[in-house]
Image 1 (cartoon, rainbow, N blue to C red):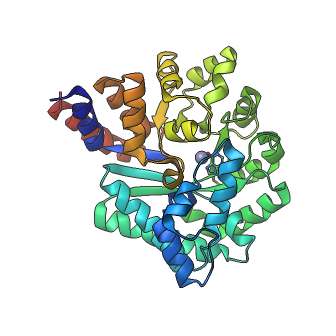
Image 2 (cartoon, rainbow, N blue to C red):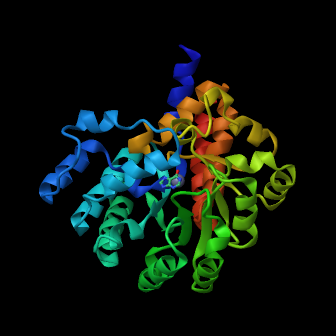
Image 3 (cartoon, protein in one colour):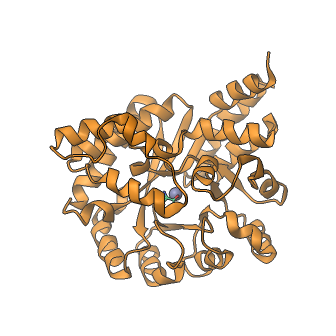
Length: 341
Ligand code: HPA
Ligand code: ZN
């Protein structure tokens, strides 16, 4: 049998965790049109096909413009439930055992949608997926870094009553010009309230932003982190502290962080000792869910079964599951590897 085909099968079946996934980025055009109709909201594209054809981006901001426009049709708790359920159903078929999902409350509260409407809808789908499919999950609330810190603080205060449902806070949206230092006080307040912290850094922004995320926001993971490679001391520090990077290959390609997947630094990063995971970021917009990301980068960089095994294990190790939960998943990955040697 063809070697690539065998590796694709191996990737599809391996138990894994997804750690960098924006729920608003899973909004497939078909569901968007359905929900828009239900809510009597018009979309500026006349068909699913026309909308999909608009998914061509020169940079992060290009993408964000379309991504925020799409999210505007989400209004009711049922909308957030349907969105989350569609993602979970999809990745259940991709052998995702655990996922850590970002959501962007400010995108919705700024339109008058209640915080409770958003989180109740998402949470309901997460509970059902655990009951029906055994998928575990955590929620990570992101602050939009292009908005001011007062808006972030207000959002954090709204989240505190839902603390039991939210594991961590993160930072996303337009990176350049919005350094982590802008949110030092917010992240201090979040940590004082028991939230873990993560941040997008070094996707388009400089290595300095990754230093700030580590030193000022005390993050447990760096989302993206591609530009860490510009700073040897930073790489040494990330390796020393074993700070995982949540890499998103198809996102990097579609947003032109890399010109070609063949130039993607993922394998080089692994060789340098960085803790690398593979994730889909915004799969509805970037042309692939988690397994498509694994397959695309595996093909481009000629990754081996052992590489895939290590990355899948990293995804569990880098998650916010407790040690017992991690142990159970390691066993599943090891049993799978044993069967498929
Ligand atoms: N970067 C920053 N913000 C985002 C992204 C991303 O890749 N996806 C959704 N919001
Ligand atoms: Zn992201």
